[in-house]
Image (tube, helix red, strand yellow):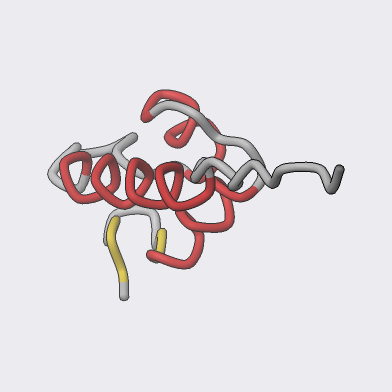
Length: 67
């Protein structure tokens, strides 16, 4: 799905940027161009970035060592 029509940025582009370590909307704009023109996509782009980061930063379970 296209998120930023002005610059042709897709949901996949945003998810890939998050996977590559993108941490903020300004950084996302620099990497992908999303929001650089009219800005109407920034809410959706921000939401996608946050969801991608949250799912990526889930804590791993701590396993007890065998005695």
